[in-house]
Image (cartoon, rainbow, N blue to C red; front, side, top):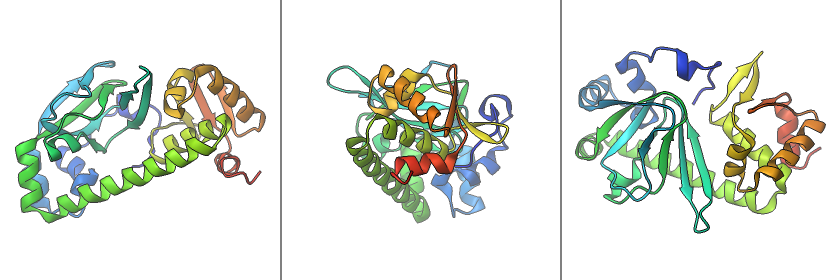
Length: 242
């Protein structure tokens, strides 16, 4: 996913539908005919900031193709604490596991800002996978990528201190394209609590870690914003080079 310029997900008009389909990882290497078929099958939905797209435990009836906005995926642990699993921006797709396995949703999806998704319902999803092998391959690639990301995250969050955890979260958001830009510098628009939910720690700990990273001159902080001023330096701190 490519990084966006400031507020692209909020202000820009979505790209034409067929062009959007070509960008969605689910349909990579698919033919124009496949893009046309899917374009005729999907059903658009819009969500206001804070709206719940689906909840953990609900029946999953469709795959969401994210055409506009930012979506947060999260779970609540046994202690009742929210853990943010991912922040997604176009042209990602999500929610494929439940309809794929005919199982309940494994996470909750919430609109961070104004969101538009296209729903590909389970029967159509299954038929497209059956009739077009490249779609099934793309699903397998996506699941492998996400599993590797979970393994990497578990390892880093287990062994890194708070500063390393926060550095990892900031770098993960940058790699996923969930950033805006301020004079060509990556800008993360999250509160300290939201960063804490991603790093698996407390808001107070995140605040201290951000101050330490700022002292290293790899980030600059503003209310509800973190600017990555030295991307390479942040990577070096994470991996203990500096």
